Amino acid sequence: MTKRMMQFVMMATMALTMVLLGGCRSYPNCATDAHCAGYAKGTNYCVDTVCRSCRDDASCGEGQRCSSGACFAIPGWCKDDAMCASPGKCRGNACGPECLGTSDCGLGQECRANRCKVAGSCDSDAECASGSRCEANLCVARIAPPTNDNCEDGRAFRTVYFDFDESTLTESARADLAFNKLCIANSSATVGLEGHCDERGTEEYNLALGERRSRSVKNYLTTNGTAANRLKTVSYGETRPADSRTSDDAWSRNRRVEFAPR
Image (cartoon, rainbow, N blue to C red; front, side, top):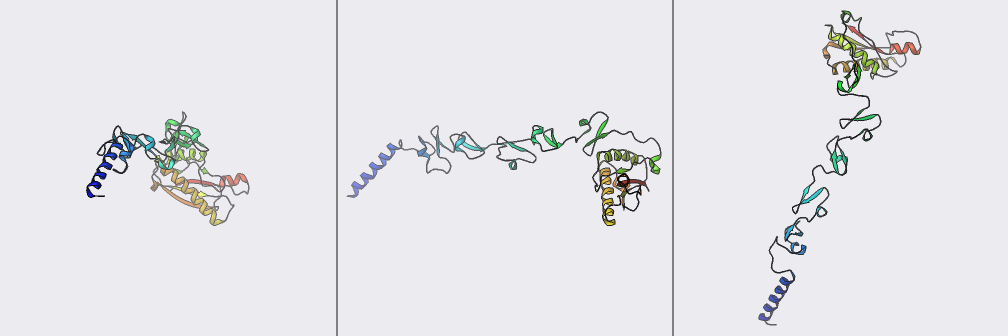
């Protein structure tokens, strides 16, 4: 084949290709998706005669939406709770609040202001019944402040009692501490918080338990506004029983923290 014939064949082939492809086109103009193949990466769809990144949402990846021929991330999209800012939850591929109702919360919890809270707890006085106020996230009865000088010599202070082998404050203990806090505010003395235990357990264990009880009381008071330098903790373990008998009643009276002005 002569050189002239080869040139003719090449021109004829190019002409046929242009006819098949709809004529000579320049990117991003197109008639079909095939016209977009091989051009800029990610623009494989012919939309309204222009090569685009997507035709619809199905053309985009997970968590994306097609808009004006381009894929964009969907704000707040998620597939699990880990993708949401804590404590948010993923519902229907959208991040939302921790709870919409109590059924969204765990055992012993309730939904308040879209947050799971311990049932019966509080964040403000407004959540408590009339005559109560919120202290350390629990509703306690409002207590009138002492009106005499007994806070100075310690006679007005209430002893705080604990369950067996416990240093956690009971609801009753919190109510007594709310009164004692007011009493401390009405006095000028430093107050000793004396931890005690019943006779069961070793001496070393009971000294440590008494210390935990006195620190539990101090933590409650300082959390609710009492200055830490007004309080001194000490443990006497089992060495100073309030009731020396060996019985459940005696043991319950010995598991305590006493307040002693210094």
